[in-house]
Length: 195
Ligand SMILES: [Fe+2]
Ligand SMILES: [Fe+2]
Image (cartoon, rainbow, N blue to C red; front, side, top):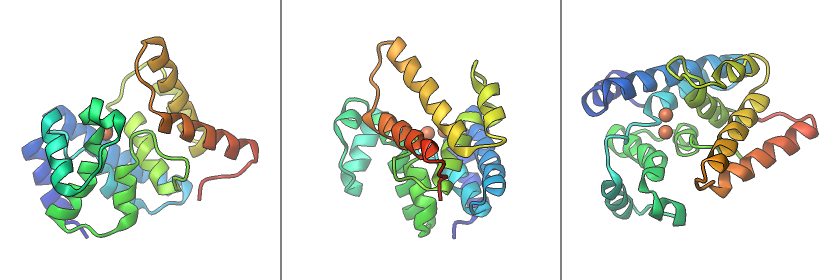
């Protein structure tokens, strides 16, 4: 299990003050969501803290790191290497801090838009990244309100908002975001919940 003090020191040394505050905010928010919706609160906190720990890297560094770590970038990541930061952060936590908990590592890997087969813990970290207290964009109050009662509804709304914005701005939408949106919608239609 990762030493949280050592991880905290790493984050302070490598990230901007703003990014560091975002990591702490995400950790605390992920823990609250986990407690609210019945996921592991300690794992949520750790994954939240570490989710952006590779963000000090720049484009080419991500590609170099991925190659050395045996991470195969997809076409979207090759075009925009920053998209590798989730996988690289999980790998850093594993190699630098010896973290072996696959639940934590997966939650970090999936924090950008989730995945159709995501679990409750993944969703808590993913949603916390959107709504932690430092976040300030027009839809955040509504997302926070939804997150008081439904993890699935809040996450689907966060995805919808982001996808719409990307479409309006003529930017690339990763198919994974749409797949996750669809999976959550089908789940909600069947009145099912994430496990
Ligand atoms: Fe991130
Ligand atoms: Fe983040």
